[in-house]
Image (cartoon, rainbow, N blue to C red; front, side, top):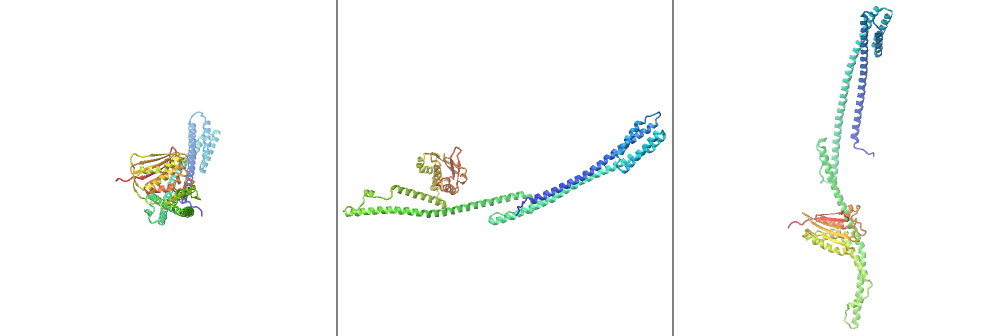
Length: 499
């Protein structure tokens, strides 16, 4: 199915209408410009013809005045000038009547020249004044009339140009109104469709979601507010979906941990049974040997008792070192099972008043032996006064132990582990810092995710359990890297209420 772009229904009509208006404006401008150019050219030609006729009339009148003078005047210069004016008149003549008048005027002046050369001066003067000058005046009047006609045509062209521009502008305005109404109508319908879709989605997601209500159809004045309200409600829906997704993920993780715990318990039951049978076998051998010793003593008339030296002389098939290994492995299995159980079934909080200073000192005492083996220096930035809190001491000790053991795991070749306790107004801040390599950027976003661990033997549940304990106390736990190097884990707890 081809992909449909929702913006084309708006861009397409607007672009098509704009192109049509542009084409109409261009055609109108070209037609009006062509008319204006034709009228202007005709007006220029008429003005040139009238000017040529006026110059010819002036020269003819000068020649007539020269005939009235006494003596022997020189007519040659005026004759040459008149011939030039006649040539100009004939050059500007473009209309049939104008061409006939120009031809008649030229023929009359040729007849005058013929008489003047034959010595018929009086006849030539009469012909010049009565015929040639009259024809020139008629030509001038005709050109004046043509100029008036051209001016009227020019004014008409200007009026048509103005009305054309008005028509194009009116068409553009009307088209804009129609198009704007169509776009507004389309937007209104789209918004209403969106309203119906979101309401339908809200009904599917849950009845507790708020209904999205718009005012009237096509109410574009409050479109911005309505869209902002719509966006806010969609954000609420998305946040609820994310919360539900996190809850579902947590439930899936808990289910997975439950299945894993059941599987681990099943797998551990067999080796624990074997270990138990071995230990029972050893104990049974010890008891049999002790019973045999007692029977021998009774036969010899001795007191039926087995001394400590005799018990020590009994030979055991299992060395003491193996028994210690078995005990260590059993304890490790118990710790792993306890971690799984703490994650799958968190214990209930048993809040009681306690001093966090003493709790931190006790926890440092628990890890001091391992820190000494790893050559890690312990430090405690303790406040001057006790820091009371209303919390579950055992669970907070578990949080501190987890954080301190993680810090010791990051310092296998020595370093510094520092614990800070800072009481504040309404909150108490506890920090555990180390001078190790710090937290990698790849591990930082996955730090409090179940089964995410950078240690080969780690389960990735210690920080998850620690954060849950802190959050159950109403606080929060986060991690960061120190500027000077190393990691810092910080959690804040609510301060104890005033007595």
